[in-house]
Length: 438
Image (cartoon, rainbow, N blue to C red; front, side, top):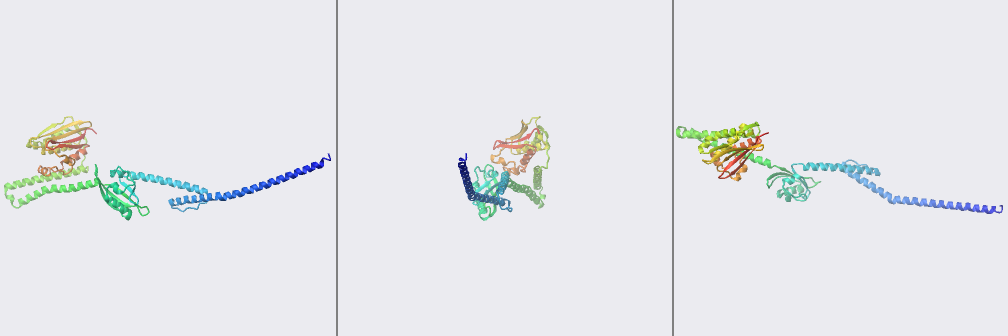
């Protein structure tokens, strides 16, 4: 045992020494590895992280700049990714708000009755609403087209060019041909130097121009219609005052002419007043059942003497039980005016017939004659005030030119309508449709 002690001690010492050496070696390796890893991390941070952070800062700044431009408010300098997230969220909210406003604006523009188009700086259409295509009767897509191509108007093309190039607004009117001709009032305005281009607003003034023409024609026609009897009355009165009163034979004729012309003037004034009251709805028409047979009989009796003088035969075929919903006086006046016209324009020995039938919830009263008839080109304007097919003959027969217009207004006021068909040399038929129930 003592002999073995020194070798054991030696082996133990060697083992301890070897272990110590291995441990120190591992520590050195671990330390070296950690140092290398730290250096590698630092290098990676320098190479990868810092550029990424710089890019994030740039993106944040860009988002903030856009937000600032939209909000027109000062912007804080970005410092970390949290600010980037907030800026992007705010930008998204702003984008949604702008999209909502854009949709609202589009809905408003498309819902307008006025036509609108927007052009760029070259005069090319970039935006328009639905109403414009209807106004221009265009089936083409107007976007990308010039004003001349879209409207066939050189004046409008020149107005757009003036707005785009000279910032000069222009107002003009454009006539559109088609099944229903239209008159458009157009205002072309520049959008401004910063935006460029032009905007044009189209107003449909067709009805306004028609009413202006009707008014001018009405004034001219009234003046002409009144001038004729007034001139006759004045002329014969001056003649009588100059000494013709002593000539009893001629004086009596002159006084008769003065009386006839004064009656015509009175009828004209009465018809004008009644037509004015009808148009302004001052006359309130009753809505009660009106027996058509009785109304037709009274109207026929009023023109019977005139018809007998010409040998014109009056025929009434109106069922006793047939009633119309309306005003008794208005129904009788409608029939009286139509019968009076029929007798006037029916040749001697002709016939004038009044018939009535029920059709569903309406009744149709027709006044048919075997007179001279009316050419087709006159029919659309027959119910206009003072419109005459044969001006000279109408005045000779004593008409005021307002009878058919009054018929039209009375029938419309009672919820009905009046139509006409005619054939020259054969005769004319006026058909009045009136309701039979509310």
